[in-house]
Length: 385
Image 1 (cartoon, helix red, strand yellow):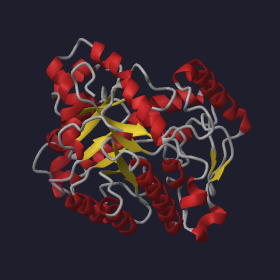
Image 2 (tube, helix red, strand yellow; image 1 turned 135 degrees about the vertical axis):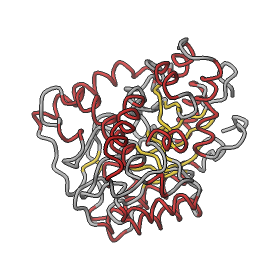
Image 3 (cartoon, helix red, strand yellow; image 1 turned 90 degrees about the vertical axis):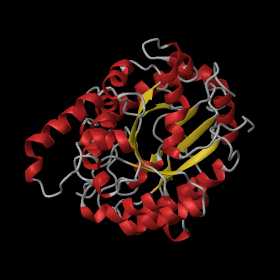
Image 4 (cartoon, one colour; image 1 turned 60 degrees about the horizontal axis):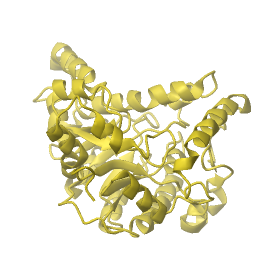
């Protein structure tokens, strides 16, 4: 299936986790403390042990906004909005409608269950393993078109490295995805994280970063705004790009990519219009202060990014021309964000292809070539579900 002559890979299409995920897949010894299904899949369906629920006064506006959006978009989701309607078969139909050949499949709510300050590492690992095992079954419905991105327990780096190996070698995953928020006071460029980056480099898979709007860590912008007016607008505006910026800093100016020159990293669903400024800022600060820093770099931070990193653009493409003009078109991939109702589905690719401020060759790179390099995809498969 080529959309208007373009082959298309979605850098991070999403699942909506079903009610039975933890009932069926979680290690039985943790079942009594499993995340509990409590509500509407379009709003906020999971209750997570050890987290503070948002006060009802402030939850009201979040629910109200999401319900209004879901109502406006309902006609585009006739199969999805029926109980556990977000099945692999329904997703394949949506991909056909949109024009997506291959999707890298990411979590939605499962990331929120594990990005919790002070959580028991054994419990975190069990939650990751439950999701990863479920995702293997989901993606194997159509292995030509689905590729999975595994979750890792970042409160135990050794366990995270072992789970990455299992996810790739036993479950067939092509990436791992992490929250870009700081957890338990550990930055990604702290040396204790190096065993994980070494493992991912050896596995030849990328580490991807993708935040959530429902933060439970006080360090996450999704938490900062949750009990204030207009929380959903401000959370969505800030949580995704701000935390990605700090993760880019750790990987470039923090020295991770200096130590691991074959590691690939992607910073997804926070748009990319901030990228030229951030790379300029990191280069400037390195030139001012870098000589006195503990970890020395052989190149400027921006050079590491251009050699090893990717960022995604959403389908409307606004300000993409400035990014391409400033840093080039080799480091940008596309996200449609299906099936979330705040996405451009089912008009995401239509809108992107109508964006006339970048060339056809740039669009071809963003729609397939760059993502194929990121995830080591081969030639586009025949679109057979």
